[in-house]
Structures are given as C-alpha cells and as structure tokens.
Length: 435
Image (cartoon, rainbow, N blue to C red; front, top):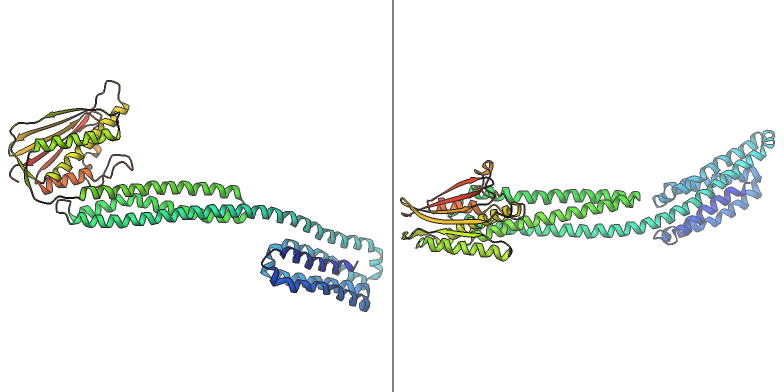
C-alpha cells in the first residue's frame, strides 16, 4: 500500500500543473511542479533501503511536507479544498506504518482493516478532485457572468461620472449667474439673494449627492455579490443603480432649469426710467404671454378681459423690468387656469382679466384669474426667493421674488395679493407717479 502515498504526492503536483497551465501562474510554478517526477526516485530509494514500513513512513512524510508547502503559498489558495483532502491519507498512512512497526501481531490481525482505511482515504482524494473539476466549470460560467456584470458596472459608473461632471458645470454656471445678479441694484439685497439661491439649488444638489453616494455603496455591494457568485442579486443591484442614475439626471435638469431662469431674469436694458404708457405695455405683455402658452399647448384657450382706464398719465419706469413682472403674473395666471381646466367640469371657462386705473398718486394694475387660487398657508411665502408651488422641474421660484424686487425696491411701489383657494387669485400692483 505504501506506493499510494507516493502516487498521491505525484498526482497532486501533476494535477496542479495541469490546472495552472492556462493561467499566468504557470510560468512561475512550471519548474517547481516538474520536480514531481523526482518523487519516484525517492520511492525507489526508500523501497530498496527501508522496506515496506519505512517506505510508507517516507511516503507519508513526503506527502505531508508537500501539503505544508502548498498550503503556505497564496497562489494555491483557490485549490485548498483539494490540497487538504490529502491529510486523511497522511494520517491513516502514518498510523498504519507505526502500528506495523510497534505492534506487528496486532497489525497482522487487523491488516485488512488498515488496508481498507488507506484505500478509503485515497478514494476520498479522487472524489474531491472530481468534485473540484465540476466546481471549476461552475467557476468559469460564473466568471463569464461576472465579466459581463463588470462591464455593466463600468458603463453605469461612467454614466454616473458624466452626470457629476455635468452637475459641476451647472454649479459653475450658477456661480457666474449669481455674480451677475448681485451687481444689479433692482434685485434683492445680497444676503437675501445669496441665501435664496443657495437654498433652492441645495435641493437638487442634495438629491444628486445622496443618490451618488447610494450608487457607490450599491457598486460595493455588487462587487461583494459577484465575489460570492450571486449573480441574481448583482443584477438586481445593477437595476437599482440605473434607477439612481435616472433620478440624478432628473434633479440635474432641475438645477439647470433654475440657472436658466436666473439668466432670463438677470438680463437688463439699463436702469434709466422713462415715461411709459402702462396700458400699451400691459396689453402687449398680456398677448405675448397668452400666445407663448398657446404655442406650447394649442388646445388651451382662455378669455382675455381688459379694462383700461383712459387718459392715464405716463409713468416713469424701467419698462423692460416692469414688463418682465407683468409677463410673470400673466404666465402664472394662465398656468393656474390651465391646471384647473384639467380637473374642472365642462362648464369651466378659463378667464384672465387685466385692468388699469388711477388710485390717488399711484397707477393701479390688476391681474385676476379664475384658476386654482393660492392656499392661505403659503400666501405669505410666494414672494420668497425660489419658493414655488409648481411641480419639480416646472418652476424655479424666481418669478414672484424678482417681481417684488422690481416693483417695491426698484420702483417704490407695492404688490398685494388677494386669493381664495379653488376660485382664483388677484395681484394688484401700485406704481407711484412721482417716481
């Protein structure tokens, strides 16, 4: 039976060499594993010099030394399940040889059982090898799947990086726009404007940062699942990463919309106030707002009602800025009636009214609609910078804030709001004649 120990040692080196043949480790271990042929030289010497029992001990110690050497090498870590399968053979072989030397009578009585134990240990090694071949095939399949998943992860990571870069460009544009706004005296004070911009842009930035962090954590989890071989869970995590990227795109566009709104409202034709026909100006922007909305939604129709007071004196104003205020109020009015029409009955007819009149030493401009109205809970907030009642992506919250700055701070006027939720809203602008 002593030949089995040498045979096991030789087969171990032979099979490891064969497994490593298609790997980068083959060059490193080729020569060392070729020394496996020297096992038979040791076998011949042991058999001729030491007899069966001595040869058995030499074979077991040779196999044990080989196992210890391979176990300490990190390159053979993936094959430890096969290497460790040889230890039972070493243990049974040493026990068999030692008992034969120490207690020959006892050994002769139980020789067949010892022989069966040695054969069983040798068969166990073979069984582990067969099982390892199946595991290697499964590993190859898993490796191919992991390669594909790694490719997907790389693509998703590239998309994530692209979104981050685009967001950084948006932030840079926002900073440049903010600097432009600060220079214009007609806008809110520096502190209010900076705080408002920072507050509003922080929301999409927080979403992008949060979903980016979550995506990075998901990528780490995916790598763990791939290492475990759980491809189903890895694919599920990849789906979550894709959803996070879609959310990052959505909130990135939200930030981009805020910047574009700031750019639109920051354009100025100068700070010189000139006498202006308020009736003509208001009517012009009413039509502009209505036809602008109609260009986007051809199915939308509204009744435009105007009541212009005759013989109004010219009002000293920056006409482009006041026109921007009126345009914003008209757009809000049409937006409110458009949304109410979507839920109201067939008898509802969207209506926007514009009227002008003389009110003491002021010119009164009234914009009234029969839309959704403004809830009392937010009526005091709608003039705050970046506050909006519109869904994310549809409004930046700059319109009414800048309108307030233009009318009150730049022209010394007033803006008043009267509204009832569900019935409509009315904005009243007072512009002083003496300014």
